[in-house]
Length: 385
Ligand SMILES: C[S@@+](CC[C@H](N)C(=O)[O-])C[C@H]1O[C@@H](n2cnc3c(N)ncnc32)[C@H](O)[C@@H]1O
Ligand code: SF4
Ligand code: SF4
Image 1: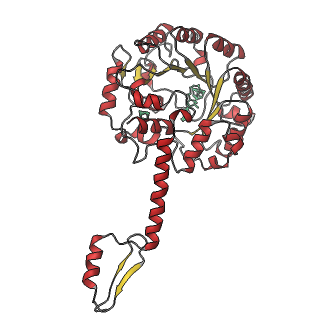
Image 2 (image 1 turned 90 degrees about the horizontal axis):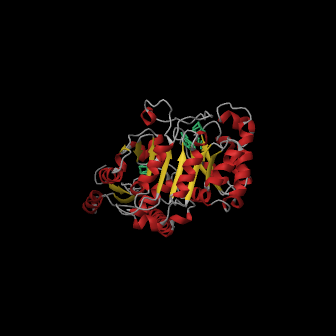
Image 3 (image 1 turned 45 degrees about the vertical axis):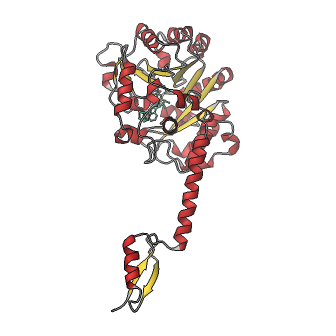
């Protein structure tokens, strides 16, 4: 119809001006081309959204890394790490063998132990690695993992050596199924952090999640209960299609075993939002800082895994945090488990290679980082950059 024209809100499409006779058409035409017309209702909605985001950013800035519950991470570390400050932490994958067959576990890339007869590091290699990382003073934290590291014949010697070198926090990742005597020996040698996997709240599913190992779940929970009375224990719960329906049951059960914390994580392959996180009781959350942190993040709309657009695009964490698996060093354990390329071979100047990797890697262009990076690493890198 001649002389009719209108302009609409860019957000909701509602008509804002209507000109039946063309008197203000010129004005409307210029308004349309600026593409910035928004109705009052949408403006107030956008303002609320901006306010919410501002509060979230302020909360994140105020949040201290040491309050998350991962004791290796702190604001001080994030602000003070330089390319020549002392290494803080090393995770060493010492063997491939495992007595379990968890459905989600991808094992190690072939290159890790390549053509070795025994798919493990020798005690001499383990000691050499420790020496290399303790070159300028002791590491603060070390973690032994595998495979199942409690089945490495020299694990006690490795722990003892770490203690002798002055490393304060000596951790082991275990499926919790070894004999009590073994765990006692590890504690006696100086191990003071046990991360134990628990993926079920009942024996039937537990044995099934271990790959059909009869009576394994009972042994694991018995060990978790017992070790928790002596030293720091966290339980790692990997969630996937098989066990997601029992999520709350697993968390409540793990908490009842007396553990210090519970690390829930969707398996790398499954990686669905853990909506059930909001159903955990406050009485449970208040006992476990890492669990509480993950729930708070979920409520804020953050992911457990993966980078968001606004996150840092470099990874200063790798400057003083390292993973050695077989004869190689990798950016981080997530990277190694996802079978990403190593940074290089284990050698004296590997720190220099890590610095180069840090300088040359835009993590937003790296498929493993963008999809798998963990919330705590993201928070650390956001603070440290
Ligand atoms: C590979 S295991 C090695 C140490 C030991 N065998 C254990 O199970 O704790 C180390 C950790 O990686 C986790 N894990 C293994 N495969 C995973 C996956 N696909 N996604 C997420 N976590 C995984 C395990 O649950 C465990 O907490
Ligand atoms: S116990 Fe650990 S290493 Fe063994 S299959 Fe399970 S996750 Fe993998
Ligand atoms: S996955 Fe995260 S912690 Fe690992 S290298 Fe990438 S950005 Fe760094």
